[in-house]
Image 1 (cartoon, rainbow, N blue to C red):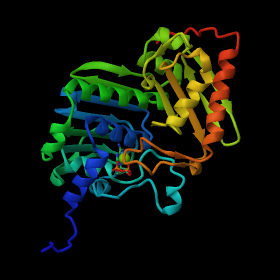
Image 2 (spheres, rainbow, N blue to C red; image 1 turned 90 degrees about the vertical axis):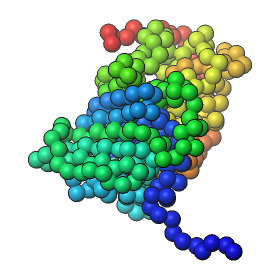
Image 3 (spheres, protein in one colour; image 1 turned 120 degrees about the vertical axis):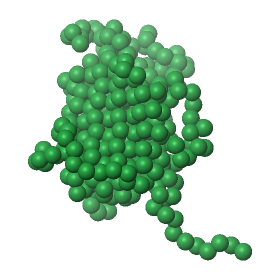
Image 4 (tube, helix red, strand yellow; image 1 turned 180 degrees about the vertical axis):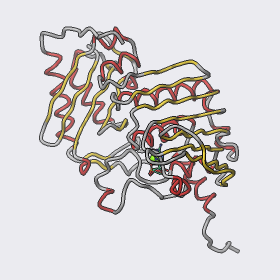
Amino acid sequence: MMAKIHELSELLANQIAAGEVIERPASVVKELVENAIDAHATQVDVVIENSGLDLIKVIDNGEGITSDEVPLAFVRHATSKIQDRHDLFKILTLGFRGEALPSIAAVADVTLQTRTATADTGFFYQIKGGQVTQEGPAAGRFGTSVSVRSLFYNTPARLKYLKKPQTEMSLIVETANHLAMAYPNLALSLTHNGKTLLKTSGNGDLRQVLAVVYDRKTAEKMVGFEGASEHFRVNGYLSLPEQTRSSRSYFAVLVNHRFVKNFSVSNAITAGYGSKLMVGRFPIGAINIELDPLLVDVNVHPQKAEIRLSEEGELTDLITAVIRDRLSQENLIPKALDNL
Ligand code: ADP
Ligand code: MG
């Protein structure tokens, strides 16, 4: 006999969603920092202990959440970012599905502390495995901090599937690097077991972010490029052909400030180098692609790591041409950076 059809409990539904959205500690970091950015934070500090297995804490100076709305933030598909189906086709925020906080709270022990600019006092809310364990007023600075402990404590299969702690930590660093490159205006820091691994100034200079992520010499030797076509604007910094890596993962593709994996764009970049680049070698750097949000569908991947672009051919032609032209110029003089 088949079992009867019934609705899943909210916790179970959230755990299933967590399976897609929250794959590993780095996914928690990504979702929490993106929430901070959506809340217009200018400073975000990420504190990690034991590769995220003991603690992932993200502290922001953003708008905060009013105390009466905090429980809603943990309800699935509850979001302040889109209203109706029209908004879905012109996403201006990093989040919009209302899935991250309920997913994280379904598989971890979460403490959120928040205070808006107009609130007399702050508010804290603790939720573990989908159950609220404590809540109430609390002193605290403006903005929001979210602490995540005991990640995957109730999903042993997920915990077992994680890689070595060093690998998980390197994925967290990579996530933070991508966010820093996508938001040079954000002062972002990352510490692990008390050691600072990343710290950007937030002065808006992408080259300075690249100097922090890689090193100063590498960033100084990169060439800046920019260009535009009917639907796209592109700009960024890439290394010269003599300074390359054997993996594509050393240049970041950022579409409307979202780090994405896109093979066509990646191939368009290497095509711009043409025969200057040896087969199997890739440049270092970052490319920003800006376009009308109507032309991007970010709703094709649970973690939004892949997107669908309209007019992709126009974009790849633009990228290849801009890079080819820039590299053929004589004055590829390195730019000295101010003291970091
Ligand atoms: P989404 O980001 O898709 O809206 P989340 O589950 O990540 O969904 O967050 C739910 C809601 O909680 C957000 O829409 C936002 O209103 C609020 N929120 C979450 N994090 C923050 C933060 N750091 N600062 C201010 N508001 C936040
Ligand atoms: Mg979110």
